[in-house]
Image (cartoon, rainbow, N blue to C red; front, side, top):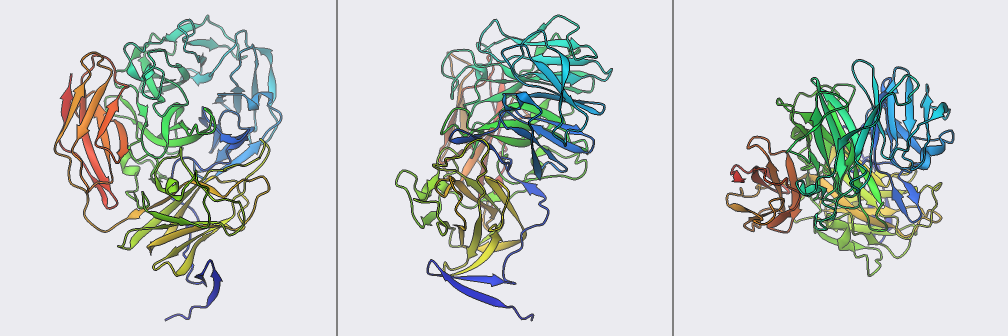
Length: 576
């Protein structure tokens, strides 16, 4: 047996073990967990990034988003490096449109006035240049598309007004319009329930049709767009298809194809669909927090694909649990990129060094990004701990979502979190799982994949540094992922779906309570073998679906899940 050198210190009345007993963190993570872990820029008292576009340049990925003061680049879609830029005057604006054409990247931001397109032949340097002429029209939520014949198009539109649909023009070699604008997508909330404004599509008013994105697949053109409002968990993406980039376009009844109103963080709209360097499709989306303001938002990355019939889908069912990042062309269903690591920390007993009354410890384990725990200070030594169930868990990954409570930082500030994660079998002797004491990266949704899974009953996070202006040590959720040995939940064999007799855009799904399940995933779609839409729920046995398409038949099934895994539903119910 190898001799293990052990050093002891007493902290908070507990023994901390250092040395060879410290658990190893993976050098290169093979998984990731949404929200994407970026240095989200401060806007007043909250962070924001939204309306993302990911494009490829040479062998790297470029990620642009609203109000970010720059953009990110990556080799692998997981480790993102930020480049602050000053040569793009429009970099602080909303919803940029970007495209790579040969060796050049073109950029245009949303504007209510006629503006310029910018370009760069080395986007890894802050050296952007301006085109000679302004666009002759103002564009909001612009996006470029280049067809196989090298013709380039510009789509744009962001409004809840009938007079402002989503439109397109063809561009010439100087990136100026060579055709008159063509109307592509009009508002149609009377038929499409998910386009009705409101968290539950309840207002009766037009949502905002916005965020156009074009993808060509096997000769067909997929014009994607978002609705109903970025501040809602029901924000989603739908799609029209056509045989030309100028249309005409036909609505696809399986819309929305990107939808995530449940789970830890919701919203899956205003996105871009792209292929990685191996040919796998992805959908990068806007996610909503909306606690400190409507535009408190994050980014999510979800597997996407076209099925054998050309149906576009995005996998969001367990989309904010750890997902695998492939390094080859997978050729598998998107759901197989889910690691199978389940959430072990939901509603577990918590304790803390201190707590502000309005932000209790339970908030950090309620699987809701709209609530958070806050210590009374941001001082070194503040901590949060969770006690898992009696049976010792196998833990594979940990995600820490920092909340920045009372942070007084401006848009140029960084909130560098320095901390340690510790584990214990008995609450007395602790091992260091991850040491971020020397961290220099602003990472507010930090994700730790363990090289060697650990067994623990307790997990603790401890603040090791004070950031001037960084506010209180606070966490949206401390999420522990792994597998509990035990029985999977019972299968959902009995449930019913009742469509609203007066408004077929709405339906109530209800099933029996079952204590063997932590939660449920309601799957549905417009064909019995294409249940691609999903909603995740905890602690309830019903869901009101308010975003259906009028008069379209739907098929439903329900999966149950707990800490030991998922039991797929086999019963399918049809409503007409």
